[in-house]
Length: 316
Ligand code: SN0
Image (cartoon, rainbow, N blue to C red):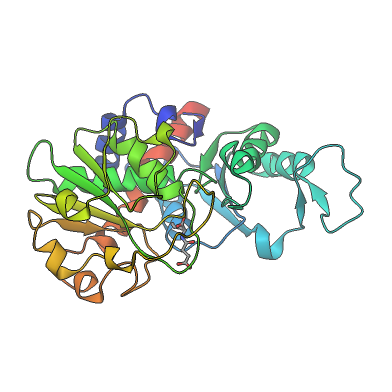
């Protein structure tokens, strides 16, 4: 694999999940693959799990890792061509990404959407320019519209813990105080639509995701109906796709509570984290026996390691 930006870059998702679960059993089996190879991780936004789990995954494979918080430590980047750079941007993506490609063998990039201009965000301009100008394999650490390492870890977690061949998986919208990207739900939806699960998305009216990501999913505005019989409930807030990046208020009752959870098939509760307690998800659920959130975050290592292993093999 030379690019990991979405589920479409993966030829066989079941194989990738199996690889991740195998690596979990034997983390250091491929240390020779990463010898004298360097991973660069570039963050244009904050990170906890992605940064630590990807670094850990690379180390397990014998790689060296360089991390840079570009938003705090780097020069302000210019992404537009043909501009006279007499303002606040200092360095153009053409040189910046080109230089990164000189120092590392694989590059990871995180760049959130601006949530102002839908066309710009959904064109993935920033992520794609890193890919174009660095000239080496690139892994997405969450781009404007997707978070594939998270979605892979989520599928690994569901595969690892499911009790039936085709579990019912429900993605449910949750309240929040600020506009969040659609990247996590878009990505989760497109992975679940390809996985062997019964997939339902529940959200209030007005929070429809871009249809490109939800082909094959059952979509409902009735959270109670969705939760009935669920084996896994994936909680996540997102801002509206239309009007783009907006919070449409009045849906505080969409928080997942123990009363709602009781209507499920003793569902395991997932969230990509960070989670706002008692706003998105009740503390009682997070601290209770049905919460998978920490276990799920642990699986981020094996997801990242399966992807990096596949990339290292393509460098051979
Ligand atoms: C990000 C998101 O895409 O929703 C990253 C998730 C992995 N989450 C946030 O930005 C949360 C910010 C907040 O204030 O709660």
